[in-house]
Amino acid sequence: MKNNKIKANILILLTVFFWGISATNTKIVLEEVPPGTLAFIRFSLATVLLWSINRKINPEMRLEKKDRKRMMFCGVTGISLYFILETYGISLISAANATILLASIPIFTMLGERVFLKRPIKKAESLGAVITLAGVGLVIGNSLRISGGYREIIGSMLLIGAALSWVVFSLANKTLENKYSILFNSTYQSLYGSLVLLPVALMEYRSWGPISMVSWGNILYLTLFCSALCTFMYLSALKELGATVTNVYINLMPFVGVLAAAIVLKETLYPLQILGGIVIVLGISLANVKSLWINSLAKGKKVLTQKS
Image (cartoon, rainbow, N blue to C red; front, side, top):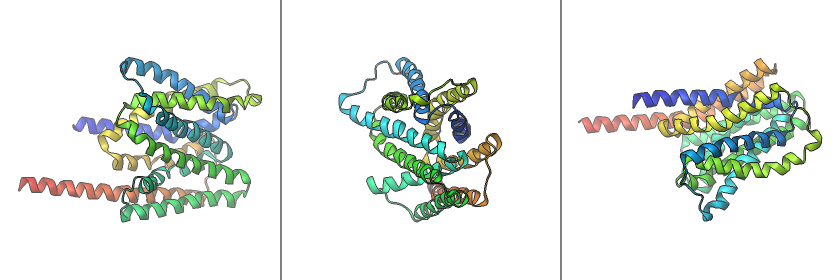
């Protein structure tokens, strides 16, 4: 049991690192490859890989006809729409800002569960949500204050749109999670997502050109590590550690992303941007860590009761 916990902690730390620097990798590739084309290449390659693995691990599992529409919807919202919005957003703003804005996903998910699943929100979670949204405002406001250009406004809104599309995907995917394996869902959702991304890529054909080895290396990194490996590592850690602990780790992603952007892309970090990132992390941590403390206290009381 202890070894499983250690393994899960290592897996989630690796996931945070790989996902944290992905915006920087994306930014590098976007110098040569249009956003929609990049998303299509990434997930069409991931689909081929996932399909071959799924056939070996789940040879008897089949997608039921009644679940096709929901699976397609999840592929469109969680793959097509999310990565179109994310990739186009990253092409317009800094990789650091993109990473910080996407860190708000856990809070948007919590609010989505409250609205659509009627899950009650605790006081700590409510306060955490308000603080997180204030941090998002600081990050966006920093971009407008520095340049005031329309690119920053549109880019920031696209990233927020990506976060919201992931919330819709997460809620719609809950039914499928209880019925099919993680690998099976990932395979079919990547397939449907890639099919929708194809026409988007074709509309960018005038911008196509030679792709350097550097860009191909970053594309393969995004495909193999961020789209395939990290999904399994994250879900494995989630199963062992639970959502609360896992989300606390995910809060480290903005710091990893900002550091990667500063080191690799030489992006300038402004005080208001750093403050916004810290506020977002504090807000999400407040919503999660207090719940973790309460759960731990409850478990401790249970153990003491059993011993007495």
